[in-house]
Image 1 (cartoon, rainbow over the protein chains, first blue to last red):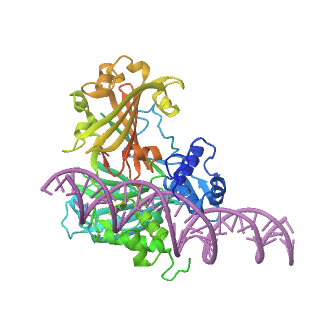
Image 2 (image 1 turned 135 degrees about the vertical axis):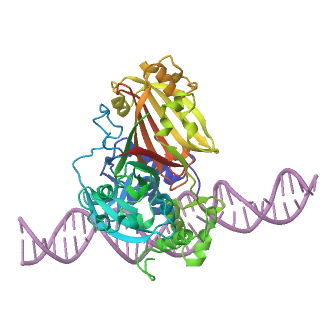
Image 3 (image 1 turned 90 degrees about the vertical axis):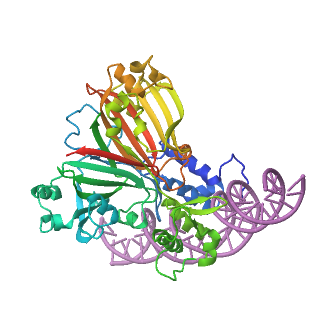
Length: 252
Length: 252
DNA sequence: CAGGGCCACTTCTCTAGAGATGTATTGCGG
DNA sequence: CCGCAATACATCTCTAGAGAAGTGGCCCTG
């Protein structure tokens, strides 16, 4: 049916709003179990699909998470802090607490898998690196894991001609990583540009990051420039948005 | 039913994957109409709810957008670029221009509504501004519209004692905006910190930004520090993620 | 030819039921 | 007291149908 008895919005939205308010009021804390399909059916006298739809709203908003066979639970949010400008970060102009208290903590980011290949450059990457259409690039794909959960997919592109024969073409780039090797080539990066946006993940990204429903990804495209202003690396990162807060400090 | 004839995943995911692939292959471009509920029911021989579920996946991924009574259409993505660094350079607001004037090329970002109040500071804001729990702050809430579509909700907090009697407490802050007025008080900001994260919008945010289903919001919390390192303003912004790309440039 | 009303088509909401599948607990047997 | 199987319960998938509400094109009237 569609008869609206109480107010103007659909039943499932009313139920969803009620649950949302309860969570925000703290009646359900992180990890707590919410009323399930059967509870909502009995409480509100609706069909199963309607109750499911209400719970689906909370999941789509990232507030709740369903565990099959167990119930629907309130999610929590404990992001890690990622600084764009690390050296200038805290002690230089300290005295600032942050809005979203994110314990950087002693948790450790670990590389889960590395894959290094040589491929033709994607058009967008080629344009930024100033390469021709069919020029090859060295591609380094990595996945980072925090506390057993994947949080970051990183794809790094470098001109194949530049890095040929260096440790950059091997899974382990050695101490200091890619940037140290670039410095040894006299092309160490001195300037960076990061472009940030966000969207919902595709099916493959959701799987590789083990994302629950309702969690967007943050896309960070970092371009590294050497002393002469030439782009030497493009790094496209896909972050679990529930795991990260990005911080950028800068002067006026 | 649940009998799986073709493969292992649910029907609705198979259908969704097929549509997604078609969009990515370019068989449907931005603005094109996708097969609707009835088409999918006939094509795949499934129930209406199953077809709806498949279309729901695409909407949740932000790929498609349903227009009631019309159909389901492929969305497009044309963001505006927002530069964190140069945008806030002193010359801009010092010279009397709005800090937003540099943001968009030809399109124009317009303030849609302004609301200035004095309230008790939220706990998180009070902590950052170094105020006591029950200290009052001047709160400036604004909504920005681009091409008729709201894209940004901005909530700015300043110590009430600091800005009392200035144009900051009025809807129109005058040439150069809030930061120019702060400079006149000898507390002009010289350093900024921006914290960026992303999540799905709540119901109210989705409505105020007129967000379709499946579009996350980007949250930017900017703290402005004066020459003595004291926080003078906290600005919490909620951005339509489909309308923005944030850019940050910095040196190693 | 312009304007307005009608109508076909679309998505949205909701019902009622059923089998599949994964989870957690309980209780029995060793 | 431990281990394992049975079981109750949870979500997930899907069916079939129907009324509500919004959109846009078509036709008829003026």
